[in-house]
Image 1: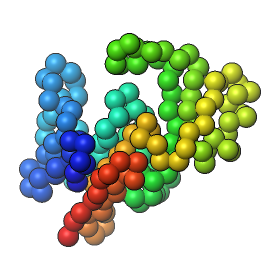
Image 2: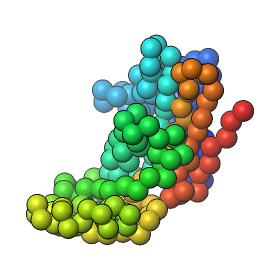
Image 3: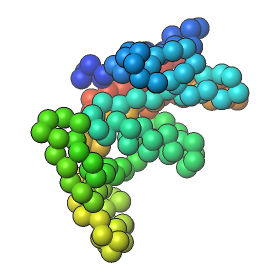
Image 4: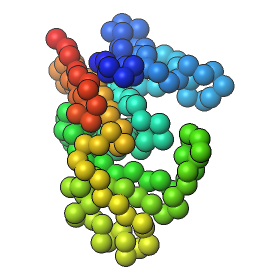
Length: 164
């Protein structure tokens, strides 16, 4: 999978290794290492996923992961699903803007949840569907029964998934 914005996931079939633009800093616990960064099930490759998006990366990845593992979506459904993001901490990038209690929701979930969140003191903002600020995950998934690989590429950025 490749995005024109220089974020990529490459999976090497026999090495149990995938590459992306993070994970190369050996000073962090999650540095690149075989069998470490992508998800395995019963000792076999199950899924790899990644996204551009700065502070939205972990939020976008966990939402996509949960869409697949908990809610039973296929990779494309998982990356197409509406997202939310919290801005309740200082931004990683200068000038480190901080919006206490702010949560942003894509329109589909804003319409269903905004009033409930406002009632419990969130500062809630609606955003248009498929805005880049919500990350743009790409996913590779191996069906444990058939070993067939499936991919999903997020329409929030120009990206695509290809395979056999």
